[in-house]
Image 1 (spheres, one colour):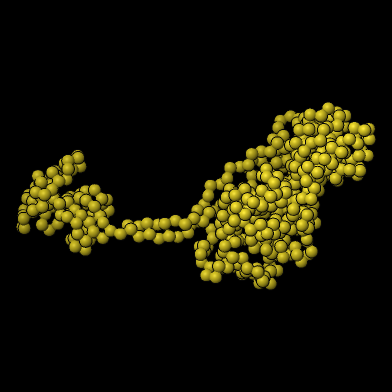
Image 2 (spheres, rainbow, N blue to C red; image 1 turned 90 degrees about the vertical axis):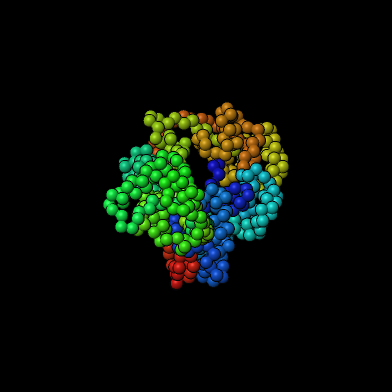
Length: 491
């Protein structure tokens, strides 16, 4: 009864985006910074795959949609995803994988129900957000096609044996890798447009203090002038205004005006002035410096010039996402001592809600079936005759269910039912049910949980390797011209 998590491939990430979530296989790929910037494809074509093209607009739309869903990818990653999808779809068509309309409609209904709306509401939401409905439906079909193709490849090439599980558990008794061996996160980058501004000074205003030294002055006279200049600087450093010190000490004509020299173009000032003030900020004061005619102190009042702007796209590395919290199974596997779990042996009758069989029709049908049970017919016979679940041939028996395995509504009904009692009709995401709990048992499930986790880990690792090898092989058999990286693959 647990719903398949097809959402990893086909669910709406968020309602406004109405786009697909990032498949894990692509999220695992290294995200190197793109080597070209957006807007560099003169003809708008980002890649050529056999006889079809992928446009820059498609790349940008994929990046934007994934950003809305909380996933950040570079242009290179997004284009790689689109190329792989195009190649896989072509291959799926060649091997005859077809997705019937009814399956697509069922997925659309699941998406709508997951987001608490009707199919009509979903269609309206798409239109309001500028999403072409036919294109969206075709995207769903393609994702289903790729999912079926991936499952077929993995099923044919992945085999985790009991010996593999035993060997894994010897090294990892909990069925989990130790924390220090958690999978290394690949760096994530986001392309952002930035504006770099630089100031190019063209003119500067100075205040000036000048202590004159006569031509041919003795060493004593020079030393006295230096001492006077240092006294003036000391007063400025202690907080006295430059203008008042200039009036008191400066021998220059502008001293009576606080040493104000006004503003001039850079090239109109003496080279020495420009050199000594090169690293002095606006409002700053130089140290005492000597020239041929005496000692000087300058204050940089202000600089004026032009601001240069340069726009460019840069790759910004994003912080690594926090580690995923442990699941219920993982917590149980790491728990010290037994993990006692109460399971229920359940059978049920299901009437599905489909695009051609509404919720109201399904409810009316399940009520009719309930009357057969109330009239004394056996549960197994009624389930065999009317249930639309795969368990119908077993009289509705779906075996033992542990907490958390079933749909929440279904699980809640199971938990509330006494043994041997039949429920009233129960609504779940799959349709309408009648449920019976045959018996309950409590067992230590920790050994089984650890084996399941070990098997899942090994299966996922093998599947990732198989899919990557297969994707590389199929890519090598296709003509691919990636204009973002400059790479080209020829058959």
